Length: 124
Image (cartoon, rainbow, N blue to C red; front, side, top):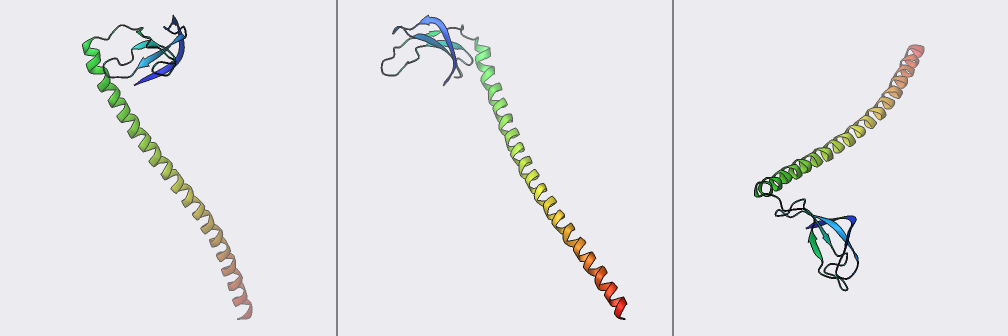
Protein backbone atom coordinates (compact mmCIF):
# COMPACT_ATOMS: atom_id res chain seq x y z
CA UNK A 1 0.00 0.00 0.00
CA UNK A 2 1.36 3.46 -0.80
CA UNK A 3 0.16 7.01 -0.59
CA UNK A 4 0.97 9.71 -3.11
CA UNK A 5 2.33 12.94 -1.77
CA UNK A 6 1.85 14.64 -5.13
CA UNK A 7 5.47 15.87 -5.09
CA UNK A 8 7.25 15.65 -8.40
CA UNK A 9 10.82 14.44 -8.16
CA UNK A 10 13.55 15.83 -10.43
CA UNK A 11 13.76 12.43 -12.13
CA UNK A 12 11.97 11.54 -15.30
CA UNK A 13 10.70 8.04 -15.78
CA UNK A 14 11.42 5.76 -18.73
CA UNK A 15 8.45 7.18 -20.64
CA UNK A 16 9.68 10.80 -20.13
CA UNK A 17 7.11 11.81 -17.51
CA UNK A 18 8.03 13.56 -14.25
CA UNK A 19 8.25 10.92 -11.52
CA UNK A 20 6.02 11.29 -8.46
CA UNK A 21 7.24 10.75 -4.92
CA UNK A 22 5.16 8.38 -2.82
CA UNK A 23 5.49 6.89 0.65
CA UNK A 24 5.36 3.18 1.35
CA UNK A 25 3.10 2.02 4.19
CA UNK A 26 4.00 -1.67 4.07
CA UNK A 27 5.56 -3.22 7.18
CA UNK A 28 8.84 -3.89 5.36
CA UNK A 29 9.32 -0.33 4.04
CA UNK A 30 7.20 1.75 6.39
CA UNK A 31 7.52 5.47 5.75
CA UNK A 32 10.16 4.95 3.08
CA UNK A 33 9.79 7.27 0.08
CA UNK A 34 10.15 6.23 -3.54
CA UNK A 35 9.77 7.78 -7.00
CA UNK A 36 7.40 6.21 -9.45
CA UNK A 37 5.99 6.82 -12.93
CA UNK A 38 2.62 8.62 -12.66
CA UNK A 39 1.18 5.94 -14.94
CA UNK A 40 2.89 3.01 -13.18
CA UNK A 41 0.97 -0.24 -13.89
CA UNK A 42 -1.41 1.62 -16.23
CA UNK A 43 -1.71 1.50 -19.99
CA UNK A 44 0.89 3.84 -21.45
CA UNK A 45 2.96 3.88 -18.27
CA UNK A 46 6.34 2.37 -17.59
CA UNK A 47 7.87 0.31 -14.78
CA UNK A 48 9.95 3.19 -13.34
CA UNK A 49 10.35 2.68 -9.59
CA UNK A 50 13.29 4.07 -7.57
CA UNK A 51 13.77 4.21 -3.80
CA UNK A 52 14.59 7.71 -2.47
CA UNK A 53 15.18 6.79 1.18
CA UNK A 54 17.61 4.10 2.31
CA UNK A 55 16.17 0.94 3.88
CA UNK A 56 15.41 1.00 7.61
CA UNK A 57 17.33 -1.14 10.07
CA UNK A 58 15.76 -4.43 11.20
CA UNK A 59 14.93 -3.03 14.65
CA UNK A 60 12.95 -0.16 13.14
CA UNK A 61 11.14 -2.54 10.81
CA UNK A 62 10.11 -4.62 13.83
CA UNK A 63 9.12 -1.80 16.19
CA UNK A 64 7.44 0.85 14.02
CA UNK A 65 4.59 -1.31 12.61
CA UNK A 66 3.60 -2.34 16.15
CA UNK A 67 3.62 1.27 17.31
CA UNK A 68 1.47 2.30 14.36
CA UNK A 69 -1.01 -0.49 15.11
CA UNK A 70 -1.24 0.75 18.72
CA UNK A 71 -1.79 4.32 17.55
CA UNK A 72 -4.50 3.16 15.14
CA UNK A 73 -6.15 1.14 17.92
CA UNK A 74 -6.16 4.15 20.27
CA UNK A 75 -7.49 6.41 17.51
CA UNK A 76 -10.32 3.93 16.87
CA UNK A 77 -11.14 3.86 20.60
CA UNK A 78 -11.06 7.66 20.69
CA UNK A 79 -13.44 7.80 17.70
CA UNK A 80 -15.84 5.43 19.50
CA UNK A 81 -15.70 7.62 22.62
CA UNK A 82 -16.36 10.73 20.53
CA UNK A 83 -19.36 9.00 18.95
CA UNK A 84 -20.70 8.02 22.39
CA UNK A 85 -20.14 11.58 23.65
CA UNK A 86 -22.05 12.96 20.66
CA UNK A 87 -24.92 10.55 21.40
CA UNK A 88 -24.94 11.64 25.07
CA UNK A 89 -24.94 15.30 24.03
CA UNK A 90 -27.91 14.63 21.74
CA UNK A 91 -29.74 12.81 24.56
CA UNK A 92 -28.99 15.69 26.94
CA UNK A 93 -30.35 18.18 24.43
CA UNK A 94 -33.57 16.13 24.12
CA UNK A 95 -33.91 16.03 27.92
CA UNK A 96 -33.40 19.79 28.14
CA UNK A 97 -36.12 20.32 25.51
CA UNK A 98 -38.47 18.04 27.47
CA UNK A 99 -37.75 19.97 30.69
CA UNK A 100 -38.49 23.24 28.95
CA UNK A 101 -41.81 21.82 27.69
CA UNK A 102 -42.61 20.48 31.18
CA UNK A 103 -41.72 23.83 32.71
CA UNK A 104 -44.09 25.60 30.33
CA UNK A 105 -46.88 23.12 31.07
CA UNK A 106 -46.22 23.41 34.79
CA UNK A 107 -46.43 27.20 34.60
CA UNK A 108 -49.84 27.00 32.89
CA UNK A 109 -51.05 24.44 35.45
CA UNK A 110 -50.07 26.81 38.29
CA UNK A 111 -51.94 29.64 36.58
CA UNK A 112 -55.01 27.41 36.11
CA UNK A 113 -54.80 26.25 39.74
CA UNK A 114 -54.52 29.85 40.96
CA UNK A 115 -57.53 30.92 38.86
CA UNK A 116 -59.53 27.90 40.08
CA UNK A 117 -58.68 28.65 43.71
CA UNK A 118 -59.63 32.31 43.18
CA UNK A 119 -62.97 31.24 41.69
CA UNK A 120 -63.62 28.81 44.55
CA UNK A 121 -62.99 31.53 47.13
CA UNK A 122 -65.20 33.97 45.21
CA UNK A 123 -68.18 31.66 45.11
CA UNK A 124 -67.87 29.98 48.47
